[in-house]
Amino acid sequence: MERTLVIIKPDGVRRGLIGEIISRYEKKGLKISNIRMIHADEEILKKHYAEHQGKSFYKDLLDFMMSGRIVVMVVEGKNVVETVRKINGKTNPLEAEMGSIRGDFANFVTENIVHGSDSAESAEREISIWF
Ligand code: DAT
Ligand code: MG
Image 1: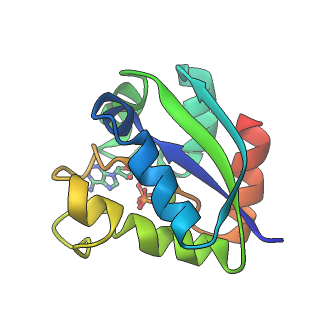
Image 2 (image 1 turned 90 degrees about the horizontal axis):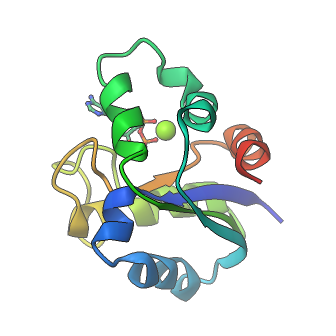
């Protein structure tokens, strides 16, 4: 079964959206096959966000991701990478469709509630970092 990595970011946890977010994946027929809540350190985030190193928003992104606890989970299902990205909505909240998690709950590009892997290869790489 295809797998992906989802992170509920510190803003999602702070705002009490853990249940709401997990519920959206489950209602779509996806399965949560592993889950943990942690306070991420810089080392693990540098691995996770390696592709963004050097970009203008990199430091703000890491600081934000260390600003509170996060929920990290493995989600499984048919076409799960694409399905989760659709449920999450576009990166920029102005472009995220209403009805998506970011469309409904996010109003800043950095603080955008959730992460979902962008491909099956990224998913396997990210799952091995966090689990
Ligand atoms: P996604 O999380 O949709 O995969 P991404 O991988 O391009 O998006 O970027 C990772 C995170 O970095 C994103 O969730 C929020 C932040 N980010 C991306 N582009 C940004 C920008 N132009 N300004 C500020 N933060 C940005
Ligand atoms: Mg990404």
